[in-house]
Each structure stands twice: as C-alpha cells, then as structure tokens.
Image (cartoon, rainbow, N blue to C red; front, side, top):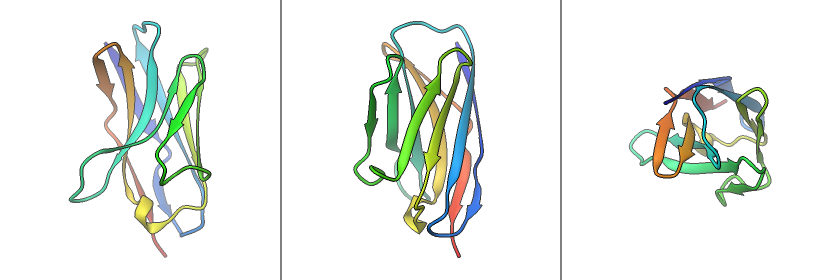
Length: 115
C-alpha cells in the first residue's frame, strides 16, 4: 500500500504559476507510474499528466506546453510545475500511483485560478 500526500495548491491569478508536490510513502514496486489528475466541480476526474519510473511523460492536450511533471525517485516525490494558469485549470488536483492494476490516490489539493 502506498500513501500519497499532495501540497502546494492555492489561489493564483490567471497567468500565474504554482508548483504541486506529492510525497509518497509505503511499499513500492517496479515498474510503476505516477500521475496528476484533476476534478472540477460537476465534472469527471481527468488525466493531467503521468510519468513512469524511467522518466517518460504524457500530458493532456489542454496542459501541454504549460505544465511540467517530474519525479525524484530517491525521495519518493513527484511534482507538477504549472505555468500560464487559466481559470479553466481550477480543480482539485490528485496524485496517483499505479502498479499493474492497483491505484493509490492522495486526498487532493485545491487549485483556484481567479482574479
């Protein structure tokens, strides 16, 4: 079982930046993937970005060129650098760990983009 704790959310103006962190603990297996998902009010949870243990990344089209996902395997930490934020980026952002078909989720961190 892997435990995940997100941090770094908050209120930011359009065009601003935020950096989310996800601290992972527990027993890890390889190969694995970690990722960020988000859920806006009234909408389904959607993929933002994923990164596998080897470093290959994948992004939703809506965030390509603005968001950067990274991970520090030695410290069991994952990051999401968000720039040029838009109001439509407002959502609760969740950290995910996946090994085979097993998923672990964090509790989420709120990101609000508003003037």
